[in-house]
Length: 196
Image (tube, rainbow, N blue to C red; front, side, top):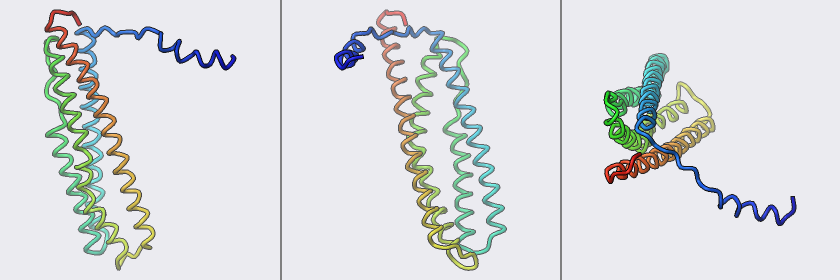
């Protein structure tokens, strides 16, 4: 392929027609049902992991020595237990509608709820940091003395995970917002008389 041919590829590519996906009510209902299953599975996994973390932290707090370390472990355990309660309260979807005409409204409503849930998740993760800081301080104090470099490295890992989760949550929320916008435009075209 010559240089001229390579330069023509982007212009040829842009001239290709964009295929339109016909969003039928059956397709929207199937996507909504799949979304509901994904939400329920994710919430079950989150709750089981959080309960496991609570159990592990409480056992560690009983076995470890040092007031600051124990306070940090119990504070993170309280954060994880609060996360279980709030995830169940806010994140769990209501019952999937039986009639196909209500599935679009249900899907939009739950996409919005999950978008807001994802955007608020970093604030919830940030609530764990007081306990994590106490854990780092507790490991650097007697009777358990770990080198301060280890605490700094562990703190860096905590902050990296936090900022990575912020970015991930924003990306997922933006993808769901695009889905909401496309469904609203379809719903608007259906009210003006067009089929979707």
